Image (cartoon, rainbow, N blue to C red; front, side, top):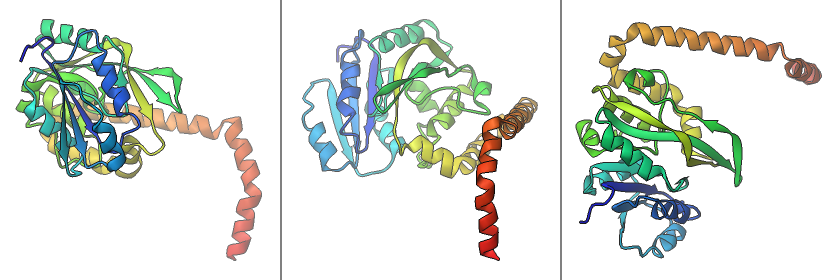
Length: 281
């Protein structure tokens, strides 16, 4: 294999036939080309499979598996990668053309960096939102309260091997957050390119939203218990951050309750609540 960038791009795909070609083209159009692109079809329906069958590029390998989740899909692909660097990309998102070039430069020149991400533009209903998302990156302690990175980042394959890959038990989400903690707590860092080179598509029923709404506590508890020794090592920082965030939440809650909009809403709903009480009686 003629290595040019030393990068393999891994794209898990589950029923994302509408978007997979845009994701793929964003990689094929990079200023520094990936040596290998592995798409993992995670048990998609026939419509997506028909789209995948149209892909004929010689650098693209497509793996078909029964639906086993994104962690299994990524691990299967990364295990086959023959490069030192891995770049994750979900099939409904895409990168600007210079991301691979800029990320590789950082990994080549900064040996303490395990992973490289960037700022994020969000796309909703085919329209870019004004706010730019700014993950902080940093060391493992910066990830102790929240995920300070993003799933679609480039990282060293040896770091993936060090932590035995993505935790395949985390089928409900937050697997990338746990992966970064597992990796970075071995004295590594994540670097964030201060440019919005990644485009994240917001869909009505996204996996991230389901994780937040339905599984947030259980997933956070799992991460804490798995890395309990690390959390206890930084207990003072962890507890202080929790107290700080709780104070911010209460301040925001109080501002909301005292806002004009909230008071108007309460006034409008008061007759309805009164009627409900009468009906119950």
